Length: 259
Image (cartoon, rainbow, N blue to C red; front, side, top):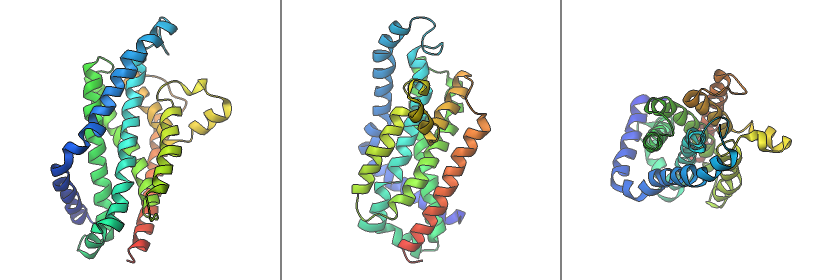
């Protein structure tokens, strides 16, 4: 990765975002926070009443939900950064062609894309964590500990999504990925309930999703829960997904832009 070129790409993204951030504020920040309030406190009161003490896995539902929902929101942010903006840069606005033709080159373009995605994911994670801490769902110290996990799942999502988007000519396939990939992973990877409640075949499928690893790691860090795997295996899996996705991204972007 060409560091100066990558930082120039990040700078360009930051300048553009400074002008349009209001348009994404609700979906990026307000929606996850409101969802936590509605699910954690609204539905959560019914769950807590139904389970009785000591609650779900010994926790109130909002405390159980908050770490998983934080990393799930980070996953969504990563998926968004790696989907439609990529097609826009390659086909509609063609800014990727300009960057590749500049001293930044392909490596600078891709490196800057991933760094900017990490920054966006960090912003979402911190804002969501602050809301969760305000509700008493997690401690302020846990917010700081969960932010790196949010970045990790965000990068593990944006890399393969970018590689996929770089090979598409239209948005229909991306919509299908969100509908049949991101949404089921969001619902059935342990974010809202333990995957032990799933059928055996679906439970096995859930354990190979990046989000499940992030959720397990987040609850381990924030709540001290034991996980099915050691923490280093969760981290290693997410890093592997990112590395493979980044390699595919470089190959497909280079081929698409003929460099």
